[in-house]
Length: 119
Length: 140
Image (cartoon, chains in turn red, blue):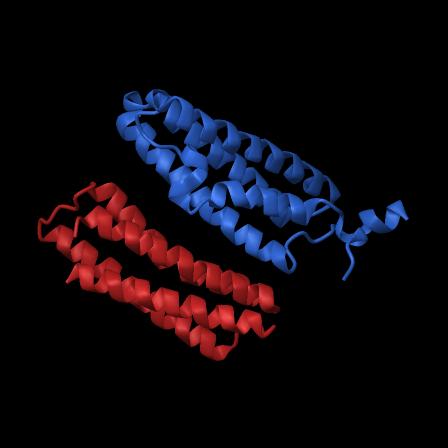
């Protein structure tokens, strides 16, 4: 269950990165649709946080420790919203590049989460 | 002329600068949280590696703050810190390759930051390129 969610969120993050990268390539700032995309990815990260905590509450142990697991879950949730706010402050193609970088960072975090959970 | 420059703090985070702040921000969170966890739970295991991660986190934090604050002094200070950071990455990167036994556990700067997609070594170079001139001298 948790691994499937990790995979989904990671792939969604990469899609978001590609989409915003495309906007940057065409010299465009992030638009409403991009923000909806960011919201979708953030909701996935939120669901992941909730499910992760439920798994912990049911007594399951992440392979590399609970502290690191929870820290990464919080990091994945904060990642895209932070990049989104920065793209609001920078209404040029560079705002789009920032969100694209955020997507890549999130994908990397998901890979680490997969290892930490021990899938 | 000088008065005109001082009148308003030059923004360092417009355009590509915003991307730099984001990446530095990520590195701050990465390095600081990593060192906090490791120092508080298993410091004796690899004191040198964990201390270096903490120092790296502080340097990243200071550069991020300078970029966001803006202004000519901040630009110069950030430039100096980036040079120190690059030196740190190259030194620690080489050190971990030459004498792995000194590092029972990895730091942010091990193997030139390979575990962090080489961002630790690429970032200071990009930042120095971005900060090399004051924005008033920059074309466009």
